[in-house]
Length: 320
Image 1 (cartoon, rainbow, N blue to C red):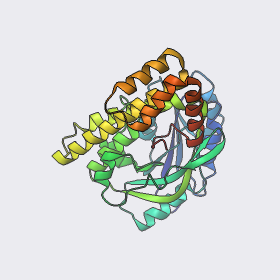
Image 2 (image 1 turned 90 degrees about the vertical axis):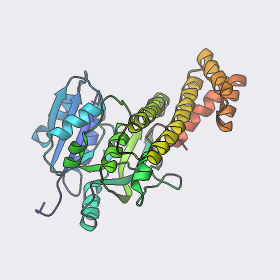
Image 3 (image 1 turned 45 degrees about the vertical axis):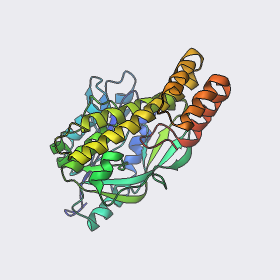
Image 4 (image 1 turned 180 degrees about the vertical axis):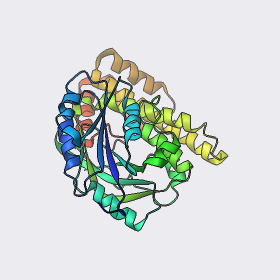
């Protein structure tokens, strides 16, 4: 690596990841442009996560801490890094081989960027289902301040470490959507994001765990919007836009909770379905799902499970 090439740290928050972290780390070692450092923060795992990481020797820096959640683990790993840029790699995902090289190529053309997003692949139970970006979810190259207040159009991110620290890092109190809320603060502070229009990561999900994950993520969206609404840097018009977006995410949260209840079945499903039907603002598609849950609960449960398998529900993008 010459003096003009930006340095990258791959940071890996890990919890109970003994079955997946070795493959995740191997994907970091397999980069066509090697990372300057790889830092794993074991967030209080009770399994063999740290032991697996230690097997890689001094190629990986290992940090251990009591369980505090992924935001705190990412903050600790980034705080320990020395590279100019940090790239997040969750312990059950994979970097594709040109992840770092493609970002360096973009920086050669746009050296003032502070954030670099890219496309990625969503894999459910070992099968690639879709790209993260598509016709209904695009990166915003223009008015990024407006766009980031409405949706997290930045995924598969790399961030300049100094900019991240100056913005205050991730908020561990959010639980989910902490990356979106941090990106909002960065862009409100003047950071600009660029985009590599090719898949650079592989998000690996299991269909059996998607419903609960979706509920938690939608709740994170709502909490992120509530926090952002209090940011003094917002104009009055921007604050109105945040409140409008929050209303949409609250509706998404209600739909996710309905889907979770339908998958669980029984009295919980009936209660959530009746609640959805009583609300005057429940959209027609959600009303249809709620009605099906009441009259044909088995059919509704199978449809909800199939939709999760087919779409890769659970990532921080719309469920299509």
